Image 1 (cartoon, rainbow, N blue to C red):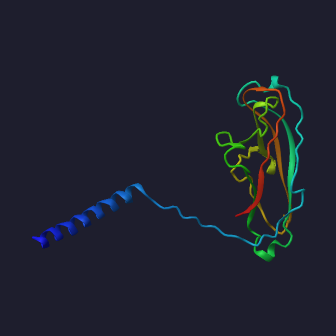
Image 2: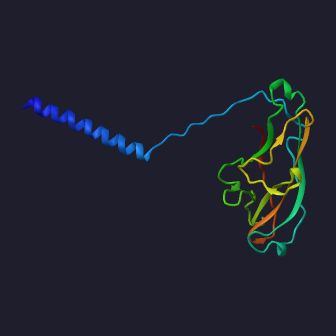
Image 3: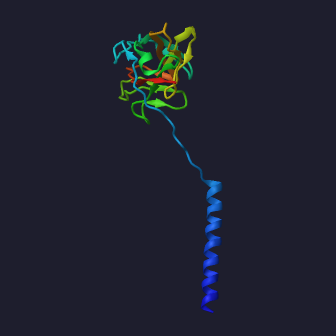
Length: 189
């Protein structure tokens, strides 16, 4: 009798284990991250840290969600001299903007930067929107996404990535100060 109970217990364990792994296979998966670190030779030649001084804009021009204004240009200048030494000729380079504080200084819905100032006398319902103007097109460069890719060739050793940044209303804005900061990184493909 003990042998039968033991056999039933072992068989029951095997069936339970098999059904658990069957459920796990349907409700679970894996994520694999592949990447590569390189010896970069491209250097930022514009100031690493920049301040874009936006003009004062009336709240009457930013009265509802989606209204924009006050855009000012800025550039990130790159020198890729010596790119052939690290095999970068024939590759692509871009600028990737990302939030400094992952949860508080950007809006994942709009891809824009939030106003860091939250005092009673600071502007409300306004964000900073960045557009890439590299290549002659004006494209929304959302935070967390990579901008326009540029080929690294013998002829493109020095290149400029051009942008504009300005105000973006999420609803009727209120008067006050605005401040936003974003981190950027050179990325290669």
